[in-house]
Length: 112
Length: 112
Image (tube, rainbow over all chains, first blue to last red; front, top):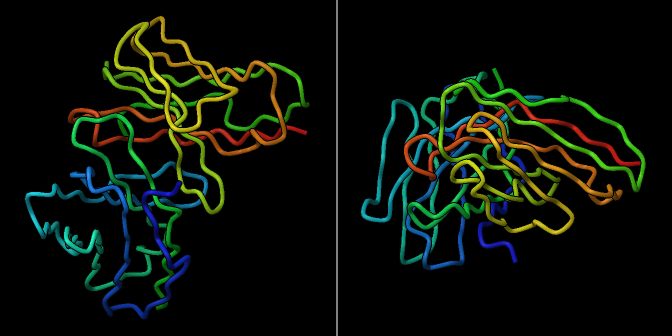
């Protein structure tokens, strides 16, 4: 029962362009959403989060958009840089609930 | 990096043997988690702890037990390892409440 889905296993973009990573969820009780980035042989690192009371959150080059009615969120990276090449995981939970669910990840490749 | 270390970093063992993985943190965080990462599944929560001697099950807890006798250490035990437990195991700590988690470098476990 995968409650968080990332349907694109991979994405390739040119340096300087926008990267858009998508995530869908099925559990309407989720109210807190996070993105993590993972490099090979390292643990995931927290990137950005958003609560369900917002529909957008920005942090530098990274913006997360939340569409609650569609149960969909997306991560925009502008401009994309080669160092952004990594696997990106979407995660969701009820706020202050320890049961966080992750998507399967999307491998982003940014070409110079 | 929230001062998280995991040991061992790599382990190869045989089916039926007991295995213990250790997670150590240096910053006195209350919440600690164990996840496994498998292709196509992202990260799945095995067990978590919300204080010394306080633990609870996650999504995929069967075949695993945990213990937390000190704030800084969270142990994951496979009582009798099976090939299906071949995976990469990540420990995490919760910073701003349990939602924002920071991960250790991972332990790659192979069960032959």
